[in-house]
Each structure stands twice: as structure tokens, then as C-alpha cells.
Image (cartoon, rainbow, N blue to C red; front, side, top):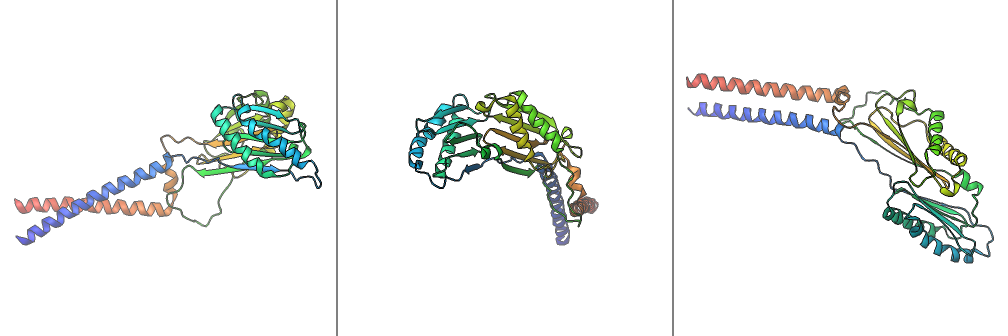
Length: 328
């Protein structure tokens, strides 16, 4: 009798374990799918500051700074309502602020106030600019015309994430392939076209296209979005197009992962224009689970889990049959 009770208890434990195994398998597959369904956000928080070298001898530095600081303090409030403002002091200082299209006045104000703080660290520089990832630019100078340095200056800030990260990594000894490059000429032409789409307007310009239109070797479904903003006081279409084309030339053509599984952002900042290139991928159902099944380690784990589950279920069924026969 005791032996029968022990066998029955063992069978109940086996059935319980098989149930847990099935639940674990279901949970594992759900996590696998969710890992692909969630798109990681790409951070765009940064501050780029360019301080031109001060003149070797500048007797008017103190007077210039004295006239500049009130401009930097007043500019955020002046630019926030419309996204742009240009101010001039009686001491020969010029300052202008630009917020990217779509920025609410409150956001524009906060961004430019932060940029003004960045510029106060430029000391005796007669020309400087600060760009914020929140979407604004503030610059000052001792003249209203652009200098050669300002015309050619570009800062490139890039971010990127895997949208469908591998759950378990496996090194098969093969070098990583990177066929996902933009056609530089196509990218430049698309950026320049934004000048005719209102890049100098308060809302800026935006164009969305498939990666295949800008790359001959894109291997997955990837959407490319280009956003542009030209300074309104440099608003001539030809000048805006030239500025955006020069910005596009500064972007690395390769490393974009145009395979439907990566997102990338590159901001190209300049004194007279802003260009953002952003890639995105669809994250709805069905998710690319097949990608994970190419990993030998993952295949082995899944096979082992399946065999264990089948064995547990068989043992449970046999145990119940034996108990039924014994009770008959």
C-alpha cells in the first residue's frame, strides 16, 4: 500500500513538472517574440559646442562680452513663439536662435535657454555656436555675415540600436557582413531636394522614403526619414540646398544596417542648416522569429526543451494508465 502511495506521489510530481515545463516553454517563446516586437528607442540627447579661437590680441573683448550676454539672455524668449529670432546689440554683437520645425514654444524656450548656457563657456570667442539634441541652435558673432569657418563647420552625432537583438549570441567564425550602405549621390540629392520642400520655413521640411530608393543593397524593410531646417536669414533656396548637400556628404555611407532589424539616427549640425537622417523598421506582427532559429545554440536549447517536454508528458500519461489499471 505504501509503495502504491509512493508511486502515485511520484506520478503526481511528474505531471506537475511536465506542466511547469510546458509553461516554461510557452513563456520562453513569448519572450522570444516580444524581444522582436519591441523597438528600442534611439536616444538623441546631446550638446555640440563650437567656440572659434579668440583673436590673439583683443582689446575690445570685455566690451563685446558685455554687449553679448544680454542678447543670449533675451534670445530664447524672442525665438520661442516662431522658432527663429536674430538680435543685434549696439556693441556689435549678433545672435540668432533656431528651433527645429514642430517644436512647441515652451520646448523651444527651454532648449535655447540651455544652449545659451552652453555658449557662456566660450569665453573670449568672437564667434560660437551651440546645438542641442532637443532640437535647437544658438550662435553669436561679431558680424552678421557667415565666416569661412562657419560655412564649412559640420558636427555629426550618430546613435543606433538593434531593434531585433539576438537572444543568445553565437560566434560562427564568419566575419560580420555589412552590405547596407547608402548611395552617397542619391542621399545628397534627396537632402538637397528638401530646400524646395520648405526647409527654410518655420516647420522645416521632411521626406520619407524606402531604403531601397537610397541604397542598392538594402536587404530588409527599412524606412528612411530626412528632416531639414535652414536658417531663415540664409533662406535662399540655392544656399539652403548647398548647405544641406554639404551636410549629407559628411554622413558615413555605410554602417546603417539597412536589413530591417536596426534603427539609426545621424544629426548633421551646421551654422546655417540642420539635417537629420533616421531609419526605422516595422515592429508589428509577424516578428522575424526565423532569425533566431538560425542560431545553433538556440536550436539545441529548443530541441532539448521539446524532448524534455515530450518525455514528461509521456511519463505522466503512462503513470495515469498504470494507476487506472491498478485500481481496476
